[in-house]
Amino acid sequence: MNLRNKLFTAFLGLIIIPLFVLGLFTFFITYNSIEKKYSQQAEYSLKAISYSILNVFKEMEYVTDNGIATSVFAMALNAKDPNSQNLIKESNADQLKLNDRQRSFRNLLYNHPAISYAFLYHFDKESRPISIFSKENFRTLPYEQFKNSPLYEEVIQLNGMAKWLAPHEFPELTGEEPLFTQIRLIKDVTTLRKLGFLVVQIKKWEFEEIFRNLTLPNNLQNTSFMVVNNEGLILFDPKNDMDGQNINQYMKQEVEYKQGYQSFKAKFNGKENIVSIYHLNEYGWNLVSVTDWNSLSQEVTSFAKWFFVIMGLCIVTAIVFNRLFMNRITGTIAVIVRFMRRVEDGDLNARVEEKGEDELLLLSKGFNNLMNRINDLFAQIKKEQRQKTDAEMRVLQAQIKPHFLFNTLESINVLAVQNEGRKVSEMVYRLASILRISIQDKEEITLEEEIRHLQSYLEIQKFRFEDVFEYEIDIPKELMHSRILKLTLQPLVENSIQHGFEGISYTGWIRISAWKDLGNVIIRVEDNGLGMTSEQLSMFEYMMSEDNPAERSTKLNLKLNQERRGLGLRSVADRIRIQYGSYYGLFICSSRPGGTVIQCVIPNYDRGEGQHVESIIS
Image (cartoon, rainbow, N blue to C red; front, side, top):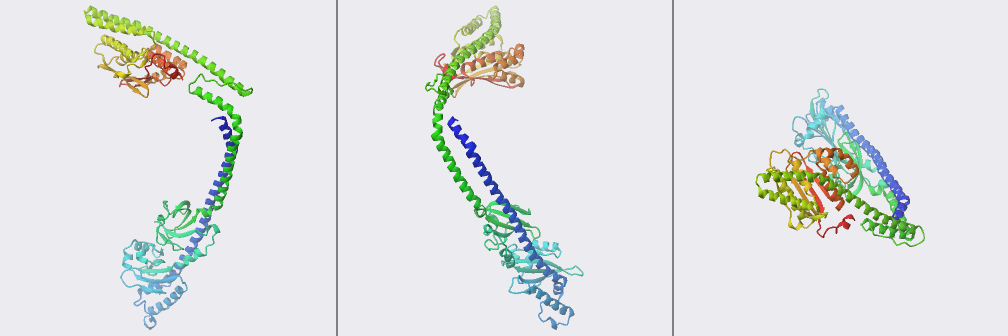
């Protein structure tokens, strides 16, 4: 980020953003407090409504309790002609008593205008219903359907307590009329014998009156109330808009009922609403209120609009200030930064024009002096690294050559004693090829020359270790002219022969292959030898890492002094990284048992020695 952007960011960070965060914080607190406050208000309202509904039901239950206590229902169920309108003519004293009590009970029912009708059914025999009270034509309860429904057993289990049915809850029993139905089991008060069932239906306008008398604030006038069962069926809607429908078709969110009270924000009929649900434990229903969120949050939304308008003006002012004043300060600095980026891209010859007489001139001179010093130090470090790596390679070759020459000459001597002239000639030829490559002054050779050197080395080792291993080389012709550091592959196969095949009871094999990948050459050396333990593999990975080479060498000296295994691999890895960069090197994969795979990654070029160095350094 440039200085101009930093100054602009500081302006935003110190003034605009804190103001913005403060406004948002205030907005969300107010926003959430509205939802919380309404949730509490809705809970109080729904509880008040539930108490009113409960009182209506309790009053109706009190009326029917009176009929049970005075044995009106029991006597009617036991009477010969309970529906007789001229019971006074009957000589039976029970009939006269029933007639008197029925008149009193009917007067009690008549004083409750919400009651539509009441009738009885015998428990243990099929008969027509016994009408106790009726203000208008009514549809009786289909008794056979009632007996075959789960409701029948539920009413019996209540043992005389009232069971209330809401409109649309059991339409096959109560009909399509919007009536609330009470069903009770009637028992003989003396013997407790089941006599029959009482069915009382009341009109819903008494419940509508509860909602009409409900006083709500102006912003809650559009609140919708309804009674819903636990399956989402809308049993009662005071506005008669959604009676008999399922609330889930308006609200896609899954709702778990029977939770006492809950309130949440949800999409209802495609709009954002606050939905509050209060569970009526006594009847298994739920009171639901639905309030449009926009009407609740109207004031907060208006505040948010003004807030964002002011924030927009502040940001525009900040941008204008940045353009008019900051450009004057940051223009010269931007030029220096542009040259610094050229240096980041690898142009170490970038220099800033030195002009002016203020502090920016000192900054330009300091940058140029720094680049000159960096170039000098870079050349010095590169020279020292090459010298160090060359010295390590010479030490390694000095250690290996005497042993290798001694063992090879001894093998030639044995073949000469055995009069194996052809083999002697071939081994001398292979040895001469190895020595010819080794004494060349060139640091890089073609991959073809490196492979010829590797073949000579492998053939000599095959003469020495008969039937110990076989090898296979698969290198595409188009890669043969690629450049590679001299003696890169020999330490890799030497590692397989000397350590991978040591003590094996089977014929080993070494496979050397190569391919091109994203401008690089991947050379793979694979064997089926003993492999490495996880500890040895960790040591190799650390040994060939590029971080802290001095510390790495110190920690490895003890192990490498006891075991020469890895000296060649470390030297190869270091030479590749110094020559080509940290992206290149050796990568090892091994397990015991299972063999070892070493991949050598180098850049692919064939333009001639030294022509690639500058691009790789950058």
